[in-house]
Amino acid sequence: MIKPPKETKTMTYQKQAPESIKEMFGTIAKNYDRTNAILSFKMHKHWNMELAKAVAHKQEVHAFLDLCCGTGEIAFNYAKLNKGAFELYLLDFTPEMLDIAKSKAKKLHLDGQRIHYIQSDAQKVPLPDEVIDCVTISYGIRNVSNPSLCIREAFRVLRPGGLMGILELTRPKNPFLKFGHTVYLKTILPILGKLMTSNTKAYHYLSQSIQSFQTPENLTKLM
Image (cartoon, rainbow, N blue to C red; front, side, top):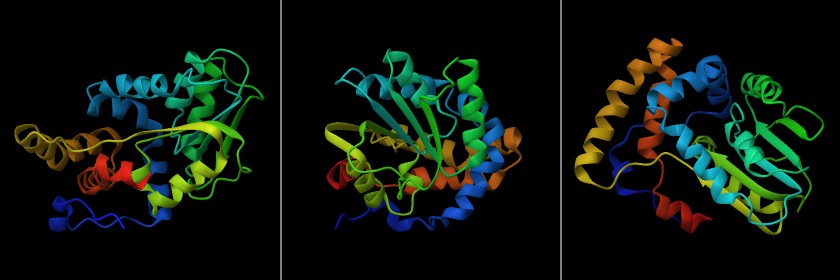
């Protein structure tokens, strides 16, 4: 069993029920991309592309699955990097996010039979065993109730030799940067989130989930 990072011992944060998280993301979906750009100083665009690059061109691709896909940013970046005919599966349990992903796909001329939108929990992927070549999840694994179960599901649907990539927000190790990061998460992020989405609660939750989630080292051991 993996022990939580030491800093979580002083936290009062408790992971919300899946339905609460689903409702929360539904309320911010319309402004999700714009808000992320402002809150990350547009650095999220670079992070997203780096994940797509990290898992791109590793093998012949027939099917790609993005869990907790949000508005489809990772999947669409992956499609740009991997030319050719293959299936794109975008899974999210928030219908509002999937609706925006569909709209973006049309603008990018990516709509068609090769894109499949799945409204489901990342812990219960409605796909057969060993049908996917690559699985990604960005900014999402800290929001699922059981990260281990989510990883098991990814492993189940991956073909032998398949690849999984995770992109997640973590806390800096440098004490100076860690202090500034904490101040930003606790004060600035919720205020900006409220101004842009009128949902202070959502960005308080996001702030707390980043601060309390396990370290990259522990997540690697879990995988």
